[in-house]
Image (spheres, rainbow, N blue to C red):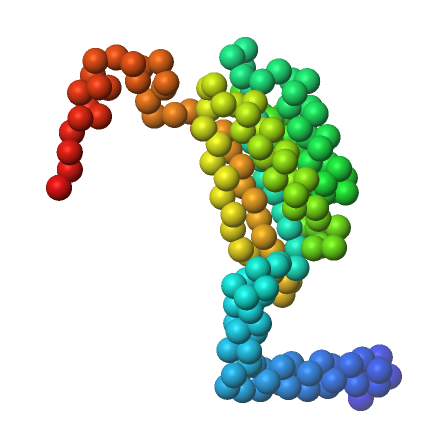
Length: 176
């Protein structure tokens, strides 16, 4: 065999170590109880401690003349930016502004301040929109993340139609 066709000894050793590590990982993943332990750890954090490892938020702010002003929306975004330590992205979309935050550790997140901002957003849209606030539990690199998704949505039946005779007639219907 010629000199250039030989395998470098360090490369050969790295390949063998990588193969051995892959086999060890494969064997360890087949051991009964490994996934159960991780699942029980997540359930403990979620239902017993009720404290995730990280937090994240995704908020949509619809814009139009009958909705909150851009100044109000900007102040809400500043508050969210302060709560998430400046780790957020703002997207201008047609008819709305979207804010998506990065994952922030439990130590840095102020839940009371975030709830106060959510109440201010709800008050700002109180006349024209209903606020949908979903709280999701997600996994991110083995950490449990509490994701907040906040979207102001148009009500199916606006308040000004609720005073009409049709609304009164439907409110008197009883269901078995």
